[in-house]
Length: 335
Image (cartoon, rainbow, N blue to C red):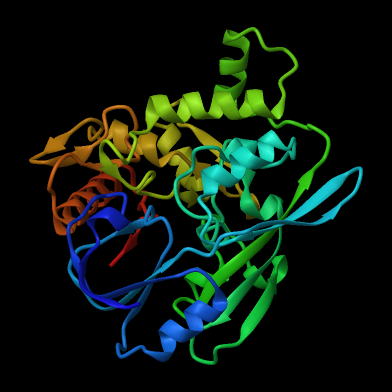
């Protein structure tokens, strides 16, 4: 059923109060087809967990919330397991279920907010793991034709927080399911420094995937505010990828600039470090600001508007560009 004039505050983790002229949920492809058949709006927005979006105004169109569920093991042997998951499943719940079943590969991605369908759209990643590392394929519904297409890893064209669905196929497809390949053996990835430190502080020498997940959850909880308590969308900015000449120039002033290898001989800088060095960490502007424990996170303390948060992000981008010659890019989608 399509509802009218629906407030979206409960459907975005920033907690921005805006209205959608029309709103509906769908739990299957057939359900989706029926809703779209009744569509009267030219503008369409697909919502999952609402964790990577900033509303700056009312949405004059139809908002569809993806609630397709499902967890199906489609192949399993002694080495690997392939799981087809509904795009409307909560990502963290899916991770926890895999850990309970001792399926390894996504434990480093614990506590990332959002839905399963959003995971390949922006190639989510954390603590040394990205979705592309475990991705097999996805099914997506073409909005105009009503046909379902299967996309392989190659067709998704994954990049750093990027995929084909954020570029040439943006707003053309609705992801309905994702298939992942995980390991039956507990080969853990504890290479990320903070994870190793957390394990050592707990005296864990031979960690299980549950140990890795617990470490990640503790680290994330200490740095990132709970959206149910303080409105936010997690990391607001991407870590910039620059040439080594840019790094060398920065190192002339800042010897210990955090940096990591990136493709094509480039390096990845830590956006949070740049923002903190520019003096923005913990800064409050009215009823919003930059989180005190993580400079990458912009927060809505009470009833800030999306425009206010967007303006703050622009000020940060301009300041970092002026101070460091590095231009930050927003990771959050602006509506």
